[in-house]
Image 1 (tube, rainbow, N blue to C red):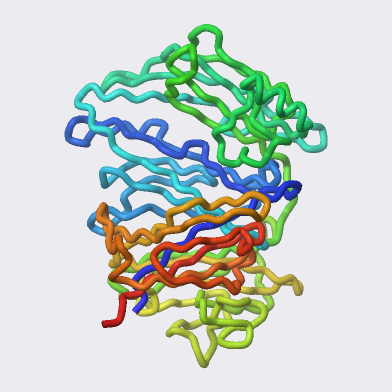
Image 2: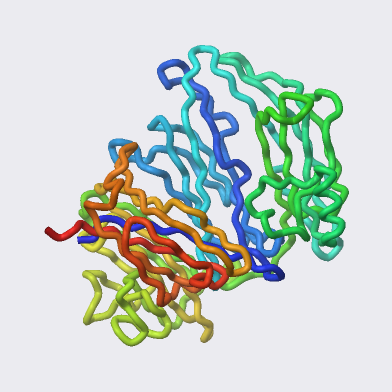
Length: 462
């Protein structure tokens, strides 16, 4: 029986091709608490997801979902609310937890980013630092090429224990990512001068649109107003304690959003939630088609479940592609509604997690969306450790499957379970790649621009 699965996205960053990437304004937030882990200060515990294509913000055109890791009782470890692409943390039911963002768009592979939250027990004098920026995003009129507003106000503050948060002097570094491409010579000159922000993951291959230092505090200050000056599409702000800018207190990223046009897409989601307990009950999956802000009805709907054994001529079809089993009257895994906009999945069909795809048509236009559901009774999670990026189709990457139950690693030597690996390309189609074992080596030639590496874990037969 299938125990668990793991999946990571592997990217080959080819020169000259527009990169598609997701970023978080903050990847980690530490909640200061008292010595008992209580009375946490959640002020500023939030992050915003941004999706960029070739350096252009495309976030409004993506469907964004979030889900929390579990605590020891199977409940959400991180509590909070999501507004648009921003998740705000309001509670933490474990020592640490994560919020996983999943961004989806028709014709693109899902993008996944993880926001980590943890407690830091410090006694009654817990200290927290906060960089506050206003506005959180800036609107650009693409016809008049003007910004609203054209400035960013920022302040730095500190909170000690239960005292009132107060402004605190520090040093600001402000970087702009311009819409105007740099020449390679200009980039190299800025790099040598130490004015390029090089520690952002998506700067690795993007020499045309780097983050360039445009302001640095010469004296300590608790706030300032920064005027946009270099036709930016993103502004990254870092706040430091020291003049050498080595002790980072907090950072924020402000995205510039251009006016957009209506888009046609299908939103595949779970109205009553995407989790069950002990394989009991059922999960409802809904496929909503949107034409801009108007919800419309599709001409036809087909549903699939991810199955590496399925091909376009066996258990699947050409619309779903390899690796996706078509749900129908002959083979449906107990599901119902597989020709409608609503699919009902019985809990018995979900072995820890399952992945579903919907293919639908509107005005003869093919749309597709995917969703994952899970059974929280299984506490074994599969992580795939290893480098997920190649350069220009060259090199290899060693990937290891790590099974975790809470903080304990299971089967560290790969003697208890079987591990079967496969690769789905950027369109979620199964490729010819296959491998077995706890650790494998992936050659860049197996990846065409972007792909998902999938590992299925099963108990060894005795």
